[in-house]
Length: 346
Ligand SMILES: [Zn+2]
Image 1 (cartoon, helix red, strand yellow):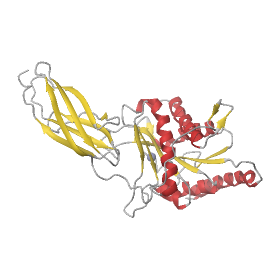
Image 2 (tube, helix red, strand yellow):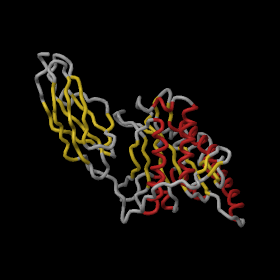
Image 3 (cartoon, protein in one colour):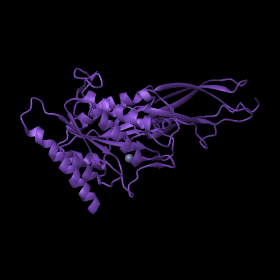
Image 4 (cartoon, rainbow, N blue to C red):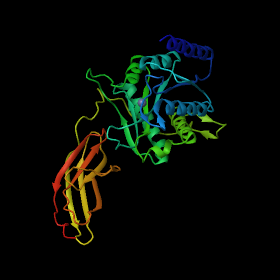
């Protein structure tokens, strides 16, 4: 606790120093960005895929690269909530940012899923007013940056707790301090599609550069040093919701699987899967050949409600075919079951 307080005081002092030029007469105030390397300390290691990935270490590496890159832009001051392996509460992270007079708090994270089947980038933000607007607007820029690595864009989302306020503590605490905040879940440490993107220090540094570019675009910064000028950069500004931008809590609807063609000679089955999710769209689909005992990996729906794909049924099996679709909040729904039942003789 004592260590934590001392570190917080240090950071607060660093921010106070930053105020001095800001209070002087200046033509244009600098943008103040605070980067929060998620997790930290012995008790809060974040997600772990051992031996390679410990989330608290990855977030710090990305944050350092993000800071170094952003500092090469003009008109911006950048701070980290922690600069070493230090424990901080979620409230402290928001308080440090507020003490820095931050314009935005970016909390960096890496993801894992319970069934180790999800992959892609997602951004979380407040469900309320201007905080939602800022988070949604920035989040889309962030997803666009991450897509260059082939990472699947899972969306910019909100989550509420049982009290109807923001679920994630750093977002909730930031809003209470009148501070826009996003959580960037860069990718999944526990999925083979994503993890090759983070398996060297250079790749983590590249993520930090991409995070910095998203911020530079959002604040329309320029860097003669880097030869980048986003002062005229255009992007859609997402407006504030009239009420609470509530998350999607219901599964996809109207999930129908149709077997278009089943080739007994080759075992090839052509399937059309249709579904809809007006709230958060469709993210992934999967299928089973054994009536749900085992499921395929997840495939991207890639923005369509009508998915066509083919599978090959192994010889001498009687498939019991069924599909699943997952919406933007990873909530799944299952299709009808189809039993061609004619492959046993192949
Ligand atoms: Zn995390």
